[in-house]
Image 1 (cartoon, helix red, strand yellow):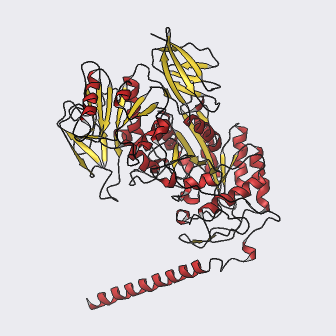
Image 2: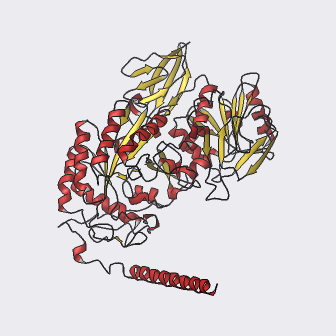
Image 3: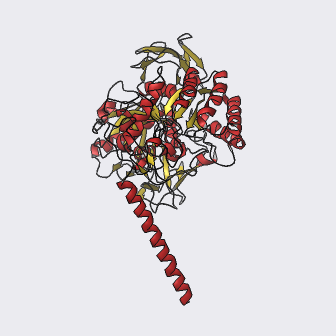
Length: 631
């Protein structure tokens, strides 16, 4: 026994000494960040210096709900019972826009109830104004559709239950009624049960409500059998649906990468947890309004958007990239190449961004591939970098990766502005506007830093991690108060997992099939450090879906998506049918609208082309009107 105790003491002593030496070395490196950086460690292009202008990060300014309270009374009327910043309505905005659901915000209950579908946000309880409660009670009785969430008194029986209670112990939700028209499309196992949080990592999940004492069958339930989603039918055709959580808050936590590790797998698989609930909201809307039109998510009326991206962060990748680009160019497609501008020798690799990189870089540009930034240092701890001064310049900006856990001299702004400057310097006919950090390391200050340094788009999280297979708008500080004019394009498939990539082609195609059911984005990452099996995978992927998917760069799809984000539309009835009015501040092309199955497009091709219930509109201009007849 004494020998065991002595051995334990010795082990503890050695661990303590090791930890002390590690911390000593780290503190020494922090105090002397350039101790091992010599003039031969930095590659300097003669006469190249910049950028000269400073990058200024603007202070946060809260986005007002009034921004979304204008325009025609059409779509889902979101009745804001709490319009303060304590309410997470911005999550609804971004989800509704991504899914193409028209909406308008109201604070006046009478104005809201002029619409077919009303979403009461953020919740209702016994303290809610009794006049408002009475008017909402009558709405489904008059044939309207009422959507609620987090209801705890006041309207319980309107939504079809007798009791509700809040809890933070619900980690899963499953569909319990597949006969419901709004749920029958969900057939994948990962749709039948979705995830709210990881119980192995968190003792509490997102706050939810359990509904019991139901007047009918629940649509979705928790593992304990209590209802998450209720439905009540009314004699006059009205309906009332109630969700057991704040969908706006969930959207914000998920897309800001704060979703309690709810993903069941990190990447290379289908994870529809958040997408599913907003697809349900869309189904409620389209089944409840005779004039319900929604906006498609893919160009050219295709089912899927495919963005193939390549990360060049290794010496050989610079030259191998040209091999991939030639194949893509021969197929008449464009992809995105995220370039690391590594001009410093450090723990990661040698300084490969030197004179030898210019020729292959220009070769990619000549084939019309997008050139994007993959940072300077490619540090695993980029998320912990200080913001920086906004005056970082080449060649005096010196981020040195010392180990997997420590990088000296780096800043969030420095990685953005210096890498962009170098790429823009050599590639004259396109400006770098897309960014992917090394190792998908994500600083909280990245959204506003992208804007400050001239970027518009990022691809720095996995779709599974943020629980959505659609692009979305970013928020200041990855928080809840201000949206910024930048967009995220999450990553779906990557090349580092086992088995090697060509052996995973079938599983990647299965993911593409599920995503295509609702017009999702499949963003693929291929490092060109190896050609062989990665090249084989890309060829196989393109052979399988090139004719059915819209293939785009992050830049081109981003420009289209950003313009789509500002599109508004509404429907008016006339003597012969209906008119779809489109408001688009920027001219754009290839917008798809989904219309009621009884509508027939009367506007001739090529302006509008109908296939089933989808209508592809070309050359969209502000104030455009598309005419329909209806049975």
